[in-house]
Image 1 (tube, rainbow, N blue to C red):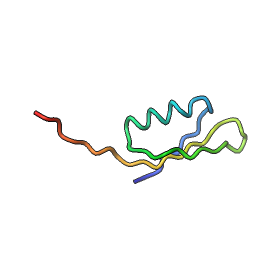
Image 2 (image 1 turned 90 degrees about the vertical axis):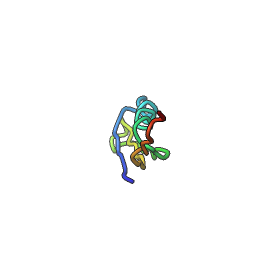
Image 3 (image 1 turned 45 degrees about the vertical axis):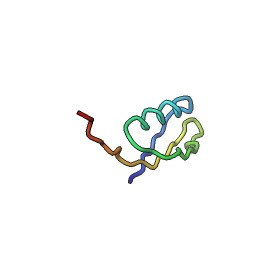
Length: 56
């Protein structure tokens, strides 16, 4: 398990969360403003997805 931190524009937060969820198993994002208050800091607890073999 690991943590992913992203600093982004507030309008991009949902899109980034959805994109990360496509590649990793993630928990809910913890969201805080940056120090300057202009952007958003997102913290995700993540894990690598379990890969299952395809049925033949």
